[in-house]
Amino acid sequence: MPQKADKIFSFPPSTLFRAWSKDEGLAQVPLYRQALYEHGVAKIQCEFGGNMEEKSELLLEIVNALGKADSHSATEGALWDIKNKPEGVISQGTGQKAIAISHTLDEFSWHIDGSFEEKPTRFFAFHIIHPDKQGGGVFRLLPVADIVNSLPDDITEILATKDFNIKVPPEFFKGAHTLRKPLLERPANGPALIRYRKGVCSADEHDVVAQKAIRVLENLLQAEDTGFAVPAEHFKEDTLLLLDNRRFLHSRTSIRDPNRWLRRVRFHADSAAA
Ligand SMILES: O=C(O)CCC(=O)C(=O)O
Ligand SMILES: [Fe+2]
Image (tube, rainbow, N blue to C red; front, side):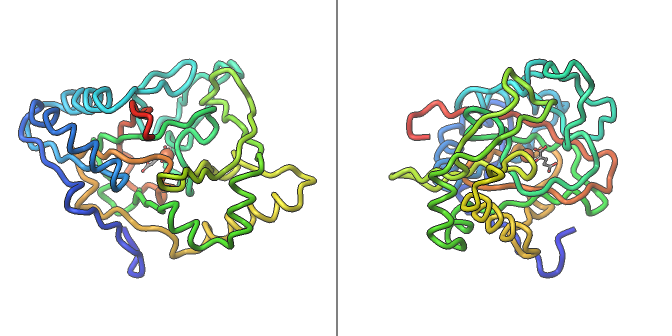
């Protein structure tokens, strides 16, 4: 449940859509694209009957019209179920079972998806199959613009210019165990973009400047009033939610309803503008 003091994420009206049929859901793709590039979000409420697979199919078709779906790991495909799954997945990196945070009921602190990828996908999308009906699993967004505005300039400079260590979690192994990348990008003609996940991104042990910069960032992210909760009215069954993965950090509170279930697709943009 959003706390009393929680700030609520407000969807600009031009980012909210309804689809009364699968065809209508697809016909509106140019409008979703515009919403995604202008505001970093688009929400489609499926108002047609039919089973959940038809809605996941619509999501995949929308994603493939907007860009290109990415696989999750060397063993998992484009669709990833976010639900309690104690059996986990098999990692090709270790040959062992690995459990992603998304397959637990735990809180997931601020991150982007695929923070450990050579090129994290610009976008991701959810099909919300069963939201948490017991007030847990609140999905939250933190615009990178707010982070950049809150950080001293010398810190953003370090985050944007130094390479940090990135560790690939075993459940998402695709061939490399580690890489080195800056955490911020500041394109000349677009919004600032981030790459971050706690425990995945770290500074060199002996680089005090980089150590300080990541500490300042992490202190900011730990503040209780950071970010905006997506309210239940926008996070319900049959909702398709498209998001700019690099323009926001996202997080979720711990889950109370064991039946909570989202389906996710990560996707690359098809346009040079991204
Ligand atoms: O469960 C959620 O609301 C989000 C989960 C998430 O961000 C992830 O699995 O990467
Ligand atoms: Fe995520």
